[in-house]
Length: 212
Image (cartoon, rainbow, N blue to C red):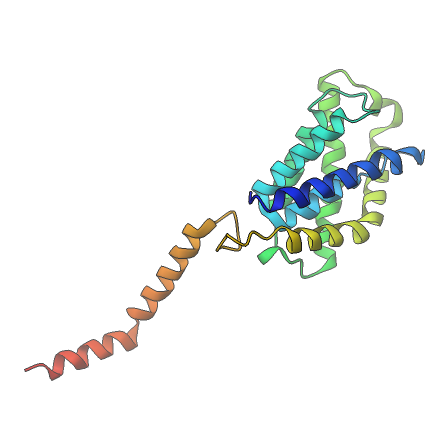
């Protein structure tokens, strides 16, 4: 993950955590709570790729585990957001630019359902039975509804901030997953294919025919 992406990721995570705890956590909505941090992680993962999404998700989840009024085991939400960030990063579009709103909403919908189920599953393993009292089905449906309603406002803004302020001026390649090595390899293959194509072979044959 590029160093230029750390400050913008930290600002977006802290802002999402602040909204999560001080605003949406106090609304007392039925079922689940709108997960702003999940939307921030998904938005950054769609720009940064699986490695960046994994790191951002772990950092965001760990801060949420430590922030009051957290009452669950430390590392539980970090594991969930880490996996969600990695999975969303695998679906990163070319150059981190989402071409359609429906594809981004589909990623958010899958992440909302998967994160809720995974969070409840990890909670069951550590003895947290809160999901049983509320109802897992109600949690999944409400989490999906709330996140889809907020996604058109949060995810595009996060992706725009990640693209605009996460660029490293010292980096040559656009993609940190491939790095300069893959870019150089691609340029080498393109140059070689052009040099060894039919036109190049024809010129070599003509040159050989002119020799005494």
